[in-house]
Amino acid sequence: MTFLPNPVEPQDRPGRVLLELPREIDYCNASELLTLIMSAARVRAGRLRVLVLDLRETHFMDSQGVRLINDVRHRLPAEARVHVVAEAEGVARRVLELTGVRRDVPVYDNVPEALAA
Image (tube, rainbow, N blue to C red):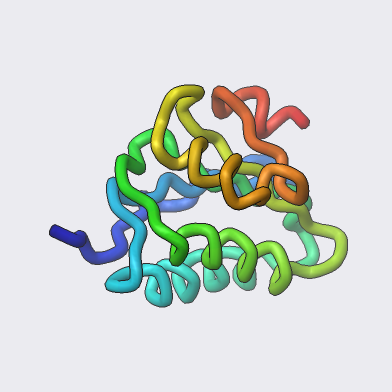
């Protein structure tokens, strides 16, 4: 079963925003998630340096999740970067490794590392 997009309220830190993503990311919710993520980024335009996408609770992610991360990366202002947090042995991390996204987007084990980088 696919859940509608429901990231928690963005957690703001100076120049950084943390968004927790849902348990599943697939064709049913990826486009809505993109809209929500980009809306959070637009609100902070000019101040955003790092957008952290927290996938620790994401237990299913298909190619639409990969596309979501790539779309976010390409749509952010040039001065902003995307960091991802994913469980070391989790599905999301394996998908990011298999698809090569890790070459372009840093993946961290925990939120403090992602925010500090």
